[in-house]
Amino acid sequence: MAFSGGSYDEVARWLWNFLTSHAKRAHPRIEVLLDAGDERHGTSYGVRFRLGADVSPVMEFDYKDVADNRGSLAWGKTLADRTRAFVREHLLQTASAAPQ
Image (tube, rainbow, N blue to C red; front, side, top):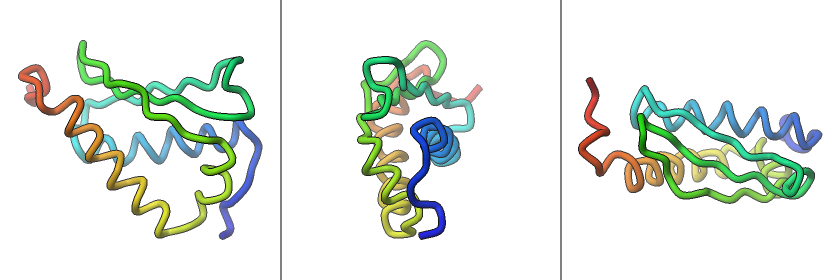
């Protein structure tokens, strides 16, 4: 697990990059909005996905869970699958999601 652990900000960057990579596989114009503000700092992350004017509900992530597991291939595969399913369910069901 070479990538496990890390500071809160380092793990936030990793999470944003990971989620962006997998969300864009569902639709290339998806954007990832990561909330790591003061209330969350050091404990959690909130993530929303945006496609045009549509914004998903928040996906919640525990900092320690992400930090401890980001080096696990099995955990990463599960998170990748979860991300794509979440995007499909919350953003790609609307008419505005059609590629232009």
